[in-house]
Amino acid sequence: MQTNLQILVDEAHSLCRKLGGNGKVADYIPQLATADPAAFGLSVCTVDGQTYSAGDVWTPFTMQSISKILSLACVQAAGIDPYARMFAEPSGDAFHSIVRLEEEKGRPRNPLINAGAIVVSSLLPGATANDKIEQLLGFLSRCAGGASFVIDDAVYQSERRTGYRNRALANYMKHFAVIDDPDTSVDTYFRQCAVRVCAGDLARIALFLAADGRDPLSQQLIVTPDINRRLLAVMTTCGLYDEVGQFALRVGLPGKSGVSGGILAIVPGRMSIVTYGPALGERGNSVAGLAALEFLSSRLNLSLFCPPDLRSEGTPL
Ligand code: DON
Image (cartoon, rainbow, N blue to C red; front, top):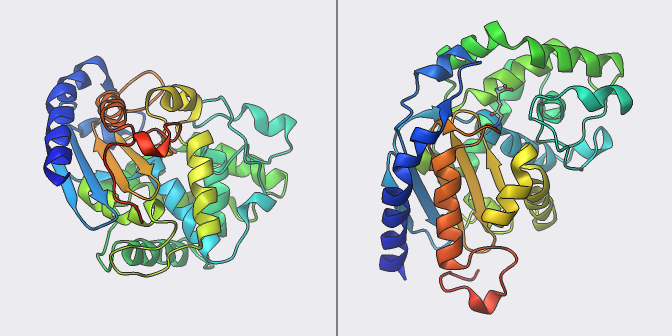
């Protein structure tokens, strides 16, 4: 099984790595435009502690929107209910959309669009942006069995200089009293987006999501099974914004993408998969990453909608 999975990961890499040529690196945060559009890697962590990787899995990138699911996990692990302030419905809109906030009185559609994620950042325990980020970094370290992570200051500063749309979202939500302190909330959000990882790190951090909330390697409970299932549910319905339907058709897994080119996908009970390819398609998701996930899902019958007895690979919990 191990050899088969490595062969398929290698095959996914060699079939998909050129597809970045069909996409474009994000440049609305100027520092992101320095990424190599040809970079491509994928990393798989299984719940029994094996890793399989190919390509640029040690290339650093910033989490961007993939951080949204981890800050949500951190807030929920602290016993805070973000759904008291937002809906849990797919928006059908782009990640940074402001359109529904007017008609829905400042309550975001879900925690994975920017508006919802800014609310989640505001709910991280701590009074200042520093405290909140320390809380999140501590949480990420616990998820990864003690590894530590830092913020990429160049990316943080770049987004801080240009992120007026996110400031507008935060101020708009303050008007409706959905958040208390827009400046702290948005500053926390910019910093969490700039946490630096590589595909291998991120697959390790997210392994608890594949193991019903417990890190299977350290045996630490990261979130309760109930919270974990909600995290996977919201990834499945909202994780790829206005491309979430295509992702369900093509991959059929809970996923979360980021504008720096990462995609995280979870196979419940079995594995976390992270792809990194900074060339994005029209909806802001990695072209090569999506194709590689589609390939692996189809070859291994990973889709949630596939009967369990047809799954050809896997390690049950
Ligand atoms: O809010 C922003 O613009 C970025 N820091 C994160 C956006 C992002 O990653 C969207 N997801 N694909």
